[in-house]
Every structure is written in structure tokens, then in C-alpha cells.
Length: 90
Image (cartoon, rainbow, N blue to C red; front, side):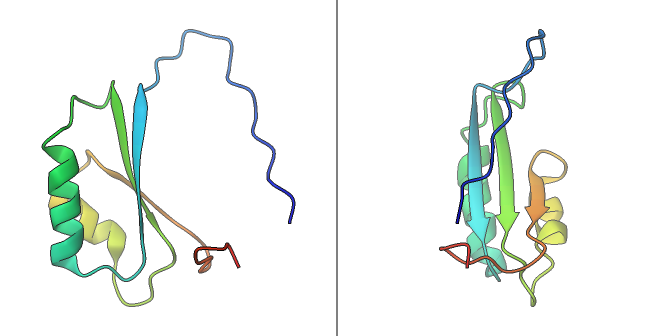
């Protein structure tokens, strides 16, 4: 499988975070996801410096976006794969 093309960054003055924390998950136990997010949020210097995002691999049994919103409000973004990709994107 060929790697997707990554576009160049825009040549404007758009401010972006210095780094990102991406947390992949699949059918997480709520207490484990909460513990992981709380650990990240305790180190949060703010959205202008750090992006925090949960990447849900199409969990069938857990509404990950709702869970993340309950734990972290709007501070943590949640994206969901349209289908389960697994570790090998298979």
C-alpha cells in the first residue's frame, strides 16, 4: 500500500501548536481513558502550545466522543475512523 501524500504547510502566519498528543483507542474502558486523559491534561500548557486528540478506531461498543467530552469538555478533540483499521491499517 502506498503512503498518502502529505500537503505542504501554508506559507502564512497561521499559529499552530508546538506539539501534538495523539491517543489511539478502540473500545476503551472509561476509567482507563479518563486516567490517560487526566495524565495528559495535568501537563497541558494550553491549546496554543499543545494539541490533544483521541483517535477512535471505529469502536462499536463505546461512544468515545461523548466519553471524551464528559472527561475533558472541549479541550480534547476526538476523531473517528469510518471503519476499523487496526494496527496495520488492514
